Image 1 (tube, one colour):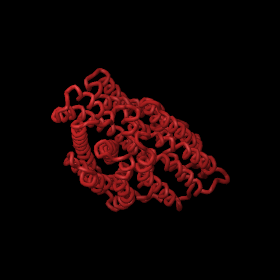
Image 2 (image 1 turned 180 degrees about the horizontal axis):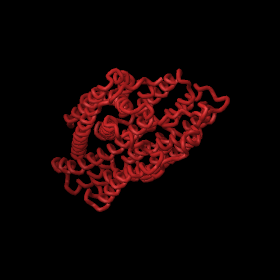
Image 3 (image 1 turned 120 degrees about the vertical axis):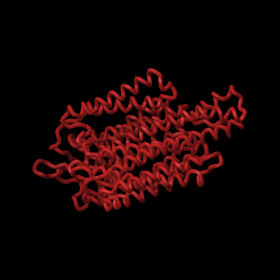
Image 4 (image 1 turned 60 degrees about the vertical axis):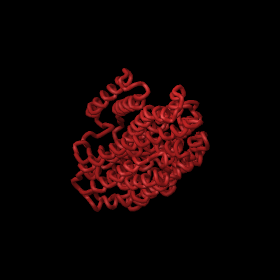
Length: 527
């Protein structure tokens, strides 16, 4: 498996080499050095990757500073990730039609503007709205960073260039939580977004100077806006219902109507896709059983692993008393393991061929064990004995599964559809992450609201004080006196253990889906 295949899961790029009818690349007569082009796009890519993971460590600080509940704050993560899952395929096509350099620059400008708006948000509602817009801007840039590089480099150098591109993605995975920890001081979180203003201006200047014009005149000038609208609306309605169910009531008319409307739009989506010439999602991909199961496995795996990640930060800061920087550094063993294993798992996957499911099962099993380990948490647990082994197992699982799932999905289809398959698989991953954030948030919040009153009552806290203490716990605020403080800590442990049970269940389903992946052919390495 080539480096393109190893790292394409990070960004859903449908790479179409830009050629004129005569077979010539559509680029300027004297383009800038391809290495300068690589540097310019990697600066923008680094900013995107860091911003994807930087918010996790700021999760509690954002909630406390804006006085927001857990269910509201989680939208700062799930809203952004959902947009980066739904929009990139359409934005990649816009780049093919109107010029990759122009669309990339437009996305970069939008990302910088929305970053500034996020940093200046006066309330959680504004921050959520700006994060969703930031996600759309990021989704505009993501597929084009890879396609610009692919067009700029000849085939014999393309593997090296994509390897560097992938390395920058991996460094973003490692640096994001640490940089977030450095920028979040107390409840001051705004610099995690404002830092993008100077970085973005540099990235814009480099893009203007060193990203050459390229487009594909053979691509039909058509974008499936109807499909994009229907799918986005369906997913948003369902996630809103999951997010607000605890607060409003699962049987309330608003929640039921949201669920039914979302389900109806999801059912309508395939009909919309069949009615357009160039759909957002190529439904013919789903005639392949291995591709279906790889997509299901990717969805479930991402829901379990990445959907639960913000709550690990929440647990470390609210229960263990970690600073944001300590919380970011706590993820370092896992993220380093991911960066080291991803290329290796791609090589192993190519060697295993049609038995690729074995490595996906092994990685999913490691993640299941990471959740299983958390079931022994109690009020005496600390990072080294309570969380670190689980994080290492999680890093092992991610490092094994991500590349292998991409290989399994792509190798089950004709080579001509490998780009579409990669983009659709990444869409499944990001939608799974958004769904996981909402689901785990509902589980965590429900457990706090049901278990914490029992803990407080058993500790002898006055009944009249219980509702206020529960509300503080759901708003990232600790109890200020004993015995309420110890009881609240025990309630947080209860919530994280129940969250781990939910994660274990999802990981088990992911293992079952992985067991049904049986690619029919081997995929040739990508140059």
